[in-house]
Amino acid sequence: MAGEHLALLYRGPEIWAQWRQDNSHKSPNLAGCNLGQMDLQAFDLSNTNLTAANLRGANLTGVNLSNSLLCGANLIEAQLTGIEGVTINLHQAQLKGADLRDANLIGGDLSEAVLLEAELSRANLIGCGLKNADIRRAELEAAQLHRADLRCAELEAANLIQAGLSQANLSEATLTGAYLYGADLSRANLREAHCAQAYMVRANFTDINAEEVDLAWSNLSKVNFTRANLRQANLRGARLHRAQFKQTCLEGADWELANLEQARGFPSLSC
Image (cartoon, rainbow, N blue to C red):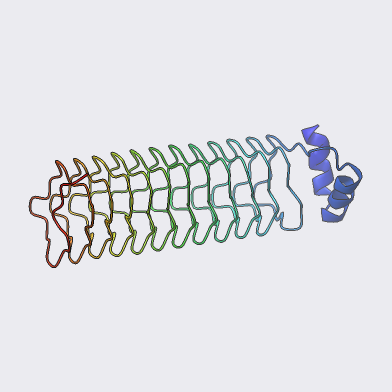
Protein backbone atom coordinates (compact mmCIF):
# COMPACT_ATOMS: atom_id res chain seq x y z
CA MET A 1 0.00 0.00 0.00
CA ALA A 2 2.83 2.42 0.86
CA GLY A 3 4.35 1.81 -2.58
CA GLU A 4 1.03 2.54 -4.32
CA HIS A 5 0.60 5.82 -2.45
CA LEU A 6 4.23 6.78 -3.05
CA ALA A 7 3.67 6.31 -6.79
CA LEU A 8 0.68 8.66 -6.57
CA LEU A 9 2.83 11.23 -4.80
CA TYR A 10 5.47 11.05 -7.52
CA ARG A 11 2.79 11.83 -10.12
CA GLY A 12 2.43 15.32 -8.71
CA PRO A 13 0.20 17.43 -6.49
CA GLU A 14 -2.78 17.54 -8.89
CA ILE A 15 -3.05 13.74 -9.13
CA TRP A 16 -2.51 13.47 -5.37
CA ALA A 17 -5.23 16.01 -4.63
CA GLN A 18 -7.67 14.27 -6.99
CA TRP A 19 -7.01 10.88 -5.39
CA ARG A 20 -7.56 12.36 -1.93
CA GLN A 21 -10.81 13.91 -3.07
CA ASP A 22 -12.04 10.65 -4.59
CA ASN A 23 -10.89 8.60 -1.59
CA SER A 24 -11.73 10.91 1.29
CA HIS A 25 -12.52 7.88 3.48
CA LYS A 26 -8.94 6.59 3.15
CA SER A 27 -5.77 7.74 4.92
CA PRO A 28 -2.60 7.77 2.81
CA ASN A 29 0.11 5.36 3.87
CA LEU A 30 3.69 6.50 3.27
CA ALA A 31 5.21 4.67 6.24
CA GLY A 32 8.91 4.01 5.79
CA CYS A 33 9.07 5.81 2.44
CA ASN A 34 12.11 7.76 1.31
CA LEU A 35 11.03 11.36 0.78
CA GLY A 36 14.36 12.95 1.64
CA GLN A 37 15.09 16.37 0.06
CA MET A 38 11.71 16.38 -1.73
CA ASP A 39 9.67 19.55 -2.24
CA LEU A 40 6.29 18.66 -0.74
CA GLN A 41 4.85 22.16 -0.31
CA ALA A 42 1.91 21.55 -2.64
CA PHE A 43 0.74 18.28 -1.03
CA ASP A 44 -1.97 17.77 1.59
CA LEU A 45 -0.44 15.28 4.05
CA SER A 46 -3.08 15.48 6.78
CA ASN A 47 -4.15 12.16 8.32
CA THR A 48 -1.18 10.49 6.63
CA ASN A 49 0.89 7.62 8.01
CA LEU A 50 4.53 8.71 7.72
CA THR A 51 5.85 6.47 10.47
CA ALA A 52 9.62 6.01 10.16
CA ALA A 53 9.63 7.88 6.84
CA ASN A 54 12.79 9.60 5.64
CA LEU A 55 12.01 13.31 5.25
CA ARG A 56 15.50 14.56 5.90
CA GLY A 57 15.97 17.99 4.34
CA ALA A 58 12.47 17.87 2.80
CA ASN A 59 10.58 21.10 2.11
CA LEU A 60 7.23 20.93 3.93
CA THR A 61 6.71 24.67 4.34
CA GLY A 62 3.06 25.41 5.10
CA VAL A 63 1.98 21.78 4.59
CA ASN A 64 -1.09 20.40 6.39
CA LEU A 65 0.14 17.55 8.62
CA SER A 66 -2.73 17.59 11.11
CA ASN A 67 -3.48 14.21 12.70
CA SER A 68 -0.58 12.62 10.83
CA LEU A 69 1.69 9.91 12.21
CA LEU A 70 5.42 10.67 12.05
CA CYS A 71 6.62 8.43 14.87
CA GLY A 72 10.34 7.84 14.47
CA ALA A 73 10.44 9.84 11.23
CA ASN A 74 13.70 11.42 10.07
CA LEU A 75 13.04 15.17 9.75
CA ILE A 76 16.59 16.34 10.35
CA GLU A 77 17.06 19.84 8.87
CA ALA A 78 13.60 19.66 7.27
CA GLN A 79 11.75 22.88 6.37
CA LEU A 80 8.54 22.83 8.43
CA THR A 81 7.89 26.56 8.68
CA GLY A 82 4.22 27.37 9.23
CA ILE A 83 2.98 23.78 9.05
CA GLU A 84 -0.53 22.97 10.26
CA GLY A 85 0.11 20.06 12.59
CA VAL A 86 -2.79 19.90 15.08
CA THR A 87 -2.52 16.68 17.16
CA ILE A 88 0.44 15.53 15.05
CA ASN A 89 2.34 12.49 16.35
CA LEU A 90 6.11 13.06 16.33
CA HIS A 91 6.97 10.59 19.08
CA GLN A 92 10.70 9.78 18.89
CA ALA A 93 11.03 11.75 15.63
CA GLN A 94 14.44 13.13 14.64
CA LEU A 95 14.12 16.91 14.18
CA LYS A 96 17.65 18.13 14.79
CA GLY A 97 18.13 21.50 13.11
CA ALA A 98 14.60 21.46 11.66
CA ASP A 99 12.86 24.78 10.98
CA LEU A 100 9.47 24.85 12.74
CA ARG A 101 8.99 28.60 12.99
CA ASP A 102 5.31 29.59 13.30
CA ALA A 103 4.26 25.91 13.19
CA ASN A 104 0.90 25.02 14.71
CA LEU A 105 1.47 21.82 16.68
CA ILE A 106 -1.25 22.30 19.29
CA GLY A 107 -2.00 19.08 21.16
CA GLY A 108 0.78 17.18 19.38
CA ASP A 109 2.86 14.31 20.74
CA LEU A 110 6.58 15.16 20.63
CA SER A 111 7.59 12.96 23.52
CA GLU A 112 11.17 11.68 23.26
CA ALA A 113 11.61 13.67 20.04
CA VAL A 114 15.06 15.07 19.23
CA LEU A 115 14.70 18.82 18.66
CA LEU A 116 18.34 19.64 19.24
CA GLU A 117 19.13 23.10 17.83
CA ALA A 118 15.71 23.21 16.14
CA GLU A 119 14.07 26.53 15.26
CA LEU A 120 10.70 26.82 17.02
CA SER A 121 10.25 30.57 17.37
CA ARG A 122 6.58 31.54 17.72
CA ALA A 123 5.51 27.91 17.37
CA ASN A 124 2.15 26.92 18.88
CA LEU A 125 2.95 24.04 21.25
CA ILE A 126 -0.02 24.50 23.56
CA GLY A 127 -0.86 21.26 25.34
CA CYS A 128 1.90 19.34 23.55
CA GLY A 129 3.53 16.26 25.04
CA LEU A 130 7.28 16.86 25.18
CA LYS A 131 8.21 14.49 27.97
CA ASN A 132 11.87 13.39 27.74
CA ALA A 133 12.34 15.45 24.55
CA ASP A 134 15.82 16.70 23.67
CA ILE A 135 15.36 20.44 23.07
CA ARG A 136 18.90 21.58 23.88
CA ARG A 137 20.03 24.84 22.28
CA ALA A 138 16.71 25.16 20.44
CA GLU A 139 15.21 28.54 19.53
CA LEU A 140 11.82 28.91 21.24
CA GLU A 141 11.51 32.68 21.44
CA ALA A 142 7.85 33.69 21.90
CA ALA A 143 6.77 30.05 21.53
CA GLN A 144 3.45 29.11 23.17
CA LEU A 145 3.90 26.18 25.56
CA HIS A 146 0.92 26.66 27.86
CA ARG A 147 -0.05 23.39 29.57
CA ALA A 148 2.73 21.54 27.74
CA ASP A 149 4.14 18.38 29.33
CA LEU A 150 7.91 18.97 29.56
CA ARG A 151 8.69 16.53 32.34
CA CYS A 152 12.33 15.46 32.26
CA ALA A 153 12.86 17.38 29.01
CA GLU A 154 16.38 18.58 28.14
CA LEU A 155 16.31 22.35 27.54
CA GLU A 156 19.92 23.19 28.30
CA ALA A 157 20.90 26.58 26.78
CA ALA A 158 17.53 26.82 24.99
CA ASN A 159 16.23 30.26 24.04
CA LEU A 160 12.83 30.69 25.71
CA ILE A 161 12.75 34.49 25.74
CA GLN A 162 9.15 35.75 26.09
CA ALA A 163 7.87 32.16 25.87
CA GLY A 164 4.45 31.30 27.29
CA LEU A 165 4.86 28.46 29.80
CA SER A 166 1.88 29.02 32.08
CA GLN A 167 0.64 25.77 33.66
CA ALA A 168 3.41 23.83 31.88
CA ASN A 169 4.81 20.78 33.65
CA LEU A 170 8.61 21.16 33.83
CA SER A 171 9.20 18.88 36.78
CA GLU A 172 12.72 17.38 36.70
CA ALA A 173 13.42 19.18 33.41
CA THR A 174 16.92 20.54 32.71
CA LEU A 175 17.11 24.26 31.88
CA THR A 176 20.74 24.84 32.82
CA GLY A 177 21.96 28.01 31.12
CA ALA A 178 18.61 28.56 29.41
CA TYR A 179 17.36 32.05 28.49
CA LEU A 180 13.90 32.86 29.86
CA TYR A 181 13.84 36.66 29.81
CA GLY A 182 10.22 37.78 30.31
CA ALA A 183 8.89 34.22 30.10
CA ASP A 184 5.50 33.49 31.66
CA LEU A 185 5.79 30.53 34.06
CA SER A 186 2.73 31.38 36.15
CA ARG A 187 1.16 28.27 37.71
CA ALA A 188 3.82 26.08 36.12
CA ASN A 189 5.32 23.02 37.82
CA LEU A 190 9.10 23.40 38.17
CA ARG A 191 9.49 20.89 40.98
CA GLU A 192 13.04 19.45 41.15
CA ALA A 193 13.95 21.13 37.85
CA HIS A 194 17.61 21.88 37.11
CA CYS A 195 17.86 25.58 36.27
CA ALA A 196 21.34 26.57 37.45
CA GLN A 197 22.89 29.59 35.71
CA ALA A 198 19.68 30.34 33.82
CA TYR A 199 18.83 33.88 32.70
CA MET A 200 15.29 34.59 33.93
CA VAL A 201 15.15 38.38 34.22
CA ARG A 202 11.54 39.68 34.40
CA ALA A 203 10.09 36.14 34.30
CA ASN A 204 6.66 35.60 35.85
CA PHE A 205 6.79 32.97 38.63
CA THR A 206 3.36 33.79 40.09
CA ASP A 207 1.75 30.75 41.78
CA ILE A 208 4.54 28.48 40.52
CA ASN A 209 5.37 25.19 42.22
CA ALA A 210 9.17 25.22 42.30
CA GLU A 211 9.78 23.02 45.32
CA GLU A 212 13.37 21.74 45.42
CA VAL A 213 14.21 23.58 42.18
CA ASP A 214 17.88 24.32 41.51
CA LEU A 215 18.25 28.01 40.61
CA ALA A 216 21.84 28.38 41.81
CA TRP A 217 23.72 31.31 40.26
CA SER A 218 20.77 32.18 38.05
CA ASN A 219 19.84 35.76 37.18
CA LEU A 220 16.37 36.23 38.71
CA SER A 221 16.31 40.02 38.70
CA LYS A 222 12.82 41.55 38.66
CA VAL A 223 11.16 38.12 38.79
CA ASN A 224 7.65 38.07 40.25
CA PHE A 225 7.56 35.33 42.93
CA THR A 226 4.07 36.17 44.25
CA ARG A 227 2.59 33.08 45.99
CA ALA A 228 5.40 30.92 44.58
CA ASN A 229 6.33 27.69 46.35
CA LEU A 230 10.12 27.70 46.70
CA ARG A 231 10.33 25.26 49.57
CA GLN A 232 13.82 23.65 49.72
CA ALA A 233 14.84 25.61 46.60
CA ASN A 234 18.51 26.18 45.83
CA LEU A 235 18.94 29.94 45.35
CA ARG A 236 22.63 29.92 46.21
CA GLY A 237 24.44 32.79 44.50
CA ALA A 238 21.31 33.80 42.59
CA ARG A 239 20.84 37.41 41.54
CA LEU A 240 17.50 38.57 42.97
CA HIS A 241 17.84 42.29 42.32
CA ARG A 242 14.41 43.94 42.61
CA ALA A 243 12.64 40.56 42.68
CA GLN A 244 9.14 40.62 44.16
CA PHE A 245 8.24 38.29 47.04
CA LYS A 246 4.67 38.29 48.30
CA GLN A 247 3.19 35.33 50.19
CA THR A 248 6.15 33.34 48.87
CA CYS A 249 7.11 30.07 50.55
CA LEU A 250 10.88 29.90 51.13
CA GLU A 251 10.92 27.30 53.88
CA GLY A 252 14.26 25.49 53.86
CA ALA A 253 15.51 27.42 50.82
CA ASP A 254 19.23 28.09 50.44
CA TRP A 255 19.93 31.72 49.50
CA GLU A 256 23.54 31.88 50.70
CA LEU A 257 25.58 34.34 48.62
CA ALA A 258 22.40 35.49 46.84
CA ASN A 259 22.25 39.13 45.76
CA LEU A 260 19.08 40.57 47.31
CA GLU A 261 19.62 44.21 46.41
CA GLN A 262 16.26 46.04 46.45
CA ALA A 263 14.33 42.76 46.62
CA ARG A 264 10.82 43.39 47.92
CA GLY A 265 9.18 41.24 50.61
CA PHE A 266 12.18 38.93 51.08
CA PRO A 267 12.48 36.72 53.06
CA SER A 268 9.09 35.18 53.72
CA LEU A 269 8.84 31.77 55.27
CA SER A 270 5.06 31.44 55.22
CA CYS A 271 3.60 28.64 53.12
